[in-house]
Length: 390
Ligand SMILES: Nc1ncnc2c1ncn2[C@@H]1O[C@H](COP(=O)(O)OP(=O)(O)O)[C@@H](O)[C@H]1O
Ligand SMILES: CC(=O)OP(=O)(O)O
Ligand SMILES: [Mg+2]
Image (cartoon, rainbow, N blue to C red; front, top):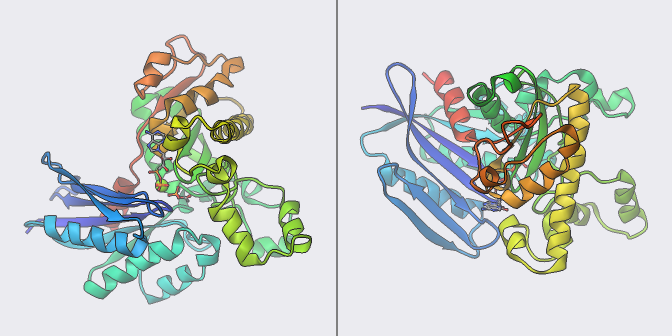
């Protein structure tokens, strides 16, 4: 029976999944894909069997990551047909100092990854819950962890360092960076779209529920906006992004907030949701006529523009900007707002191409190219897993 790899990608607002058939020559053909989206609100399961049947099922307002995972495993089971699962690849957001490459999961690896949960509270517990859920139903099935942090380990030390006493760095307090599986996918595909940028200086904007930017120098990560945790950098759906650490001291010392309250504030009540008071979902904000929704979008675009400028300076130039993930791939007004701020670099937006979601969204005469390239973290995970399982 043909071999297949299952991929599970638990994000903060979604659980994405895919099944790939592994051909004799090692190539991977996607056979099933989908996601549970809208976790925390009205969660829906989407299933695409790639033969034209696309179904959606409401999971109800109370559905959490566990319910999402159970629904996903049921859908996968129902669609496997003659395929035999030979391995499972997981997105695991934090790999810490130890992991700069994907790894087959055993007891010791799992224990070590659990210890990183405080550094990625929106993701790591769900990523590892998926590993354990699969382990319960199929204890002998090899499982592979693919890390969001691994792609950034090529960065020079200066880009990974905080200005703290050295002892903290030795204890692992570093800028790790995230969304690395997505950046790995974009870096691999960029030569097909823009060979000059692939050999030069590119800023990739992964704008989803979590959002970050990555500076690619000839396809290698040299700097990124997320740091020790996935809180740093851009404001996100519910996360604050870059914040003066003095604010946290103030909340602790003057407002008497507990660490758990501050964690909830920074991870779940801030970002687009906190500033708008309306929603964490960019689709809802773009449709809203509430001035606070417009202000939240303003702040998101302002911060993205400011960070693109910083990364371009680190790269020593800018050949292309690439937009990806939920907002990056679909929110033309957000891309427009950010790119209008790069007019001084000679970047010239092609409005019609932008409205059509690309792929190229700048004019032929533009001094800097901009692209929309859909990311595919699942394919990157599948490729790593297929390589590591027998
Ligand atoms: N058509 C759209 N217009 C604007 N924003 C969108 C659109 N589609 C999706 N999004 C945004 O993308 C986010 C999800 O992005 P995604 O990359 O799938 O997230 P996750 O971090 O869960 O993987 C949603 O929360 C929503 O804000
Ligand atoms: C690391 C991170 O923020 O991931 P996501 O965007 O999937 O929430
Ligand atoms: Mg994501």
